Image 1 (tube, chains in turn blue, orange):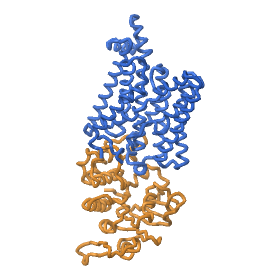
Image 2 (cartoon, one colour; image 1 turned 90 degrees about the vertical axis):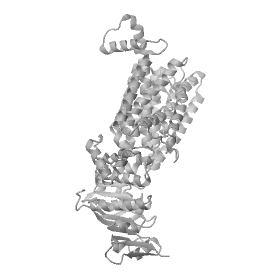
Image 3 (cartoon, rainbow over the protein chains, first blue to last red; image 1 turned 45 degrees about the vertical axis):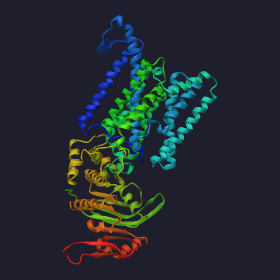
Amino acid sequence: MSLTQSQPRRISLVGGRVDGLVLVAIGLASLVAIIVNLGLGANDIPISEVAHLAWRKILGQEVDPAYRRFEVILFGVRLPRVLLAFLAGSALSLAGAAYQALFRNPMVVPDILGVSSGAGVGASLAIVLGLPTVGLHLMAFTFGLGAVFLVLFIANVVGRGRSLLVLILVGVVVSALFGAVGSFVKYISADDQSLSSMVLWLMGGFSRSSSLDNVKIMALAFFIGAIPLWLTRWRINALAFGEEEAQSMGVNYESLRLIIIVSSTIMTASSVALCGLIGWVGLIIPHLARFLVGPSFSRLLPATILGGGLFMLLVDTVVRVVLPGETPVGIITSILGAPLFIIILCLGRKTWT
Amino acid sequence: MFGAKDVDLSLENVSCGYGSKVILSGFSASIPAGEVFCLLGPNGIGKTTLFKSILGFLPILKGRVTIEGQDLNSLARAARAKLMGYVPQSQFTPFAFSVMDVVIMGRTAHMGLLGRPSASDYLVARRSLARLGIEDLKDRFFTELSGGEKQMVLIARALTQEPTFLMMDEPTSNLDFGNQVKVLKIIRDLADQGLGVIMTTHFPDHVFQCGDKAALLTPLGTRLVGPLKTVLTADNLSLAYGVKVTVLKWPDSSLDLTVCRPLY
């Protein structure tokens, strides 16, 4: 009980107006972060130039030849990366928030039903087989989805689909199984080259997929997952007291649960497929968002989308600008995430019982 | 207030249980809106199973449950929720929802497939809080309320569904003496305003305070259903619970008071 009762109470006053302002503030901060981020890098481009170039692009005007070099860096390299990082952060955070509502537990992470370990196996196999990047993405995505459907299938057979506990336990088992298979694939991989690619892939990063095409794919997956969650946001609130009470309030529980699981899985699987394993975001950002705007999913959903994107951008800034080379994102999220999480827990300490 | 006159909830020869295991079979009763119907019996006799089957949490193995002739099992969840509200025994959620957040959940069935609560939905929610005299809790965190306050909020949430019948699972079990009395009085008031209430309870005294009819399930497999004075007699209660009790009535008509007391 003590773990699930540790939810920090929110800081803001209860009331739509205050929450609205918080959301607007996070939105503005995200916008500023995106613009600043576009200017930062090996070649610093002044903010004014970024704004100038973006404005020209929006108006569809020709760019001055003197700035062409900047244009390529800005729109060909940095913009896709910034957008990819933002979308991946949004997708993982939203998936985490949705799962936490479904499982009624603030400690649940988007990986709980095995999507990440499944995707890891898919990616490792693709590397062993020497598939091109697109093949790797597809394999990772398919295996991620496959792992979750396997969990749903087994849970359905074992617990006749009724119990969330069965679902979680099967998720743990299948995750462990896929983890072992992943290790086995690494073990049998013939050369050190592919082994190190696998390890590096699993640690996560944005540079490998920073193309506009990949951004489009990630955006598509994000919207496929986020729109159903947006449409059912008020029903998701009714899950807060459990299955029976949700049903008594008119929620078709089985279909809502499926909507949440499929939506979250699509978002997480595509994020893992394109960017590798990035932990913590799906746990911390929903916590932080609940702290700011409360647990009502109608406010939590936009707050996690913006907050997750913003956090991921911050992490990628550290990777791209502060640190030399290309440190895997997964490492930085954990290093930044762990103390952040402890701070959140301290702020909510009053309600520990 | 509810305008639901002459509506009956009928249990017709209902069998219920888990999977193929029948716990209770052939149970019949008719409960009109505007009355309080109390379900009593020792632990493990099938009270909760029956209760959950009426709510649709468990499938009905045989027989049917109808409101105005309409089989509840044939209704979609949302349609059912507009007829029947549920006040659970447990009051746990891990998230710090405001009381208004919780009460507005009661409008879920009215919101339409993809909807959100409208201004009129919030009006209904505020009216429910006002009926129970707990408007001042509106902005508090549900997780920080006392057990009694939580119970009131969950009743308000069920009223916000605007149902014809209210299912209450041991509505007094986690409350102190004062709050028990308060809740029993509210149950009586709600029924007088036209709502049908079906509640499970372990306390015959609570039934005497607010009930109209009772069903007593006994270990011999008999079910006694009817008005309190024929069902909750000393003999029946002693038989059902396996302890010797007496039922005392206030000697003259100046006070409508009946109490149940164990004899040692």
